[in-house]
Every structure is written in C-alpha cells, then in structure tokens.
Image 1 (cartoon, rainbow, N blue to C red):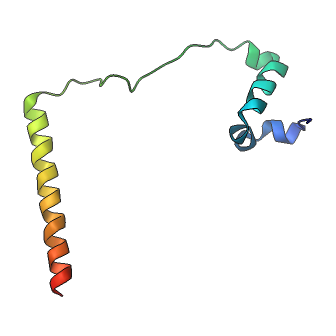
Image 2 (image 1 turned 90 degrees about the vertical axis):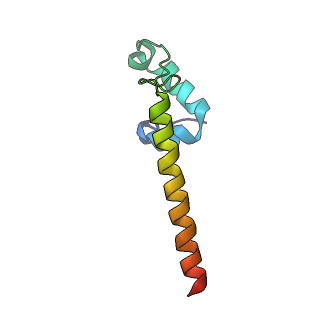
Length: 78
C-alpha cells in the first residue's frame, strides 16, 4: 500500500494506523533525526499530599456526594 503525500501529512490517518507511523518515520530524515526519550510526568505527583490535604479532599467529596443524594431525593419527591 502506497502512502500519498496528503495521507502522510494527515495526523489522524496516521493515528488510526500505527504501522504507517513507523513507515513515515523510516522514510523521513527529519523524523529519524529526532532524539527519542520517554517522559513520564504523571508517574509521580509533583506536590506530595499531606494528611490535611487528603482530609480536606475527602470532606469535599463527601459534601458533593451528599448534595448529589439530596438533589436526587428532591427529584424523586417531585
């Protein structure tokens, strides 16, 4: 299967077919020249959460859950 220029420039068609991405990289000197390294910024939280922050988050979640239940009860009563 040959890739036309417009298909190679369309990032959405490349996302749907990963083998085309590898073909495009192999055919492009600019892409081959890119430095490759993996970044994993979401592996660790940047700011460690304290017990006070966790308690505050849990209280907020409980408040939202209680409000959702109250809204549901009001809806069922009407």
